[in-house]
Image 1 (cartoon, rainbow, N blue to C red):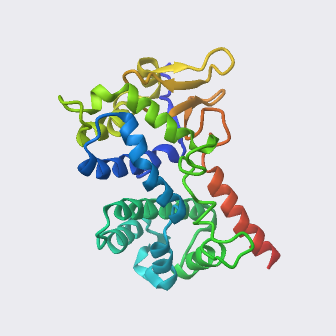
Image 2: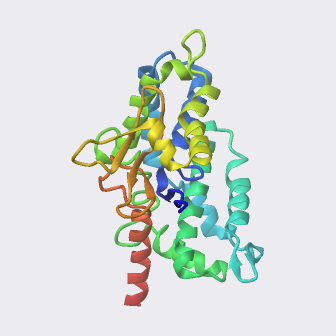
Image 3: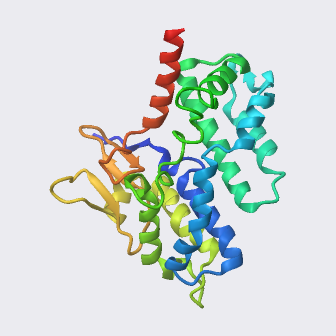
Length: 290
């Protein structure tokens, strides 16, 4: 009998424009000026940018203002009563990212859009939005509202977990894992003079995993490029970072599925949509109170 292919329970480590891609794009902008010659130089050069990102929040002030000001007031975003998230993403990207002179802000703003639309897509699975006003009510009243008891969640609760608590703390695990891998893989991401090459960085730290996952499937990918975490956690697989980089993979018990983990494997961030669930629950609780 033919076995079913392993599939993925995706978490936010490697989403369409996720934390790691954001990190790579920030590094590439820095490298245009710095011409880094080691992973240590990259790590040190990132510190002020990471501090800026943390103060800014995952979804920045300008993005929040434009959403509040009516950027979403376009009923053409709904087709046959269904929210068209692709159209929404394109509209937001065009409006928010294309007029920025600051290259770092442009990278961060692009992350804004994918984070917001990803959250909206998750909410829509349960909320079944039929109008822009419903979306604005959920986000502007309950998430982007500084006057709520917990404040504006886009400044705190929504912070990408690889950046949250930088430079220390378990939430920053993917950030440090990236740099551990970068140091091991420097020969693959640098040119003949040992200087970081932006195209090679993108290929090795992002594209190679995506290509292997698509062409090989998870089972062959794990066999070729991953090692298990030992007898205590044999279902957790880490990439062999001497030649490969990718997210931690966690095999789901009794199912042919893997979680692409944004935590250490079986840590607190291994559950897909954990943060999205918590935010959605706040909206549900508030509506129940009302």
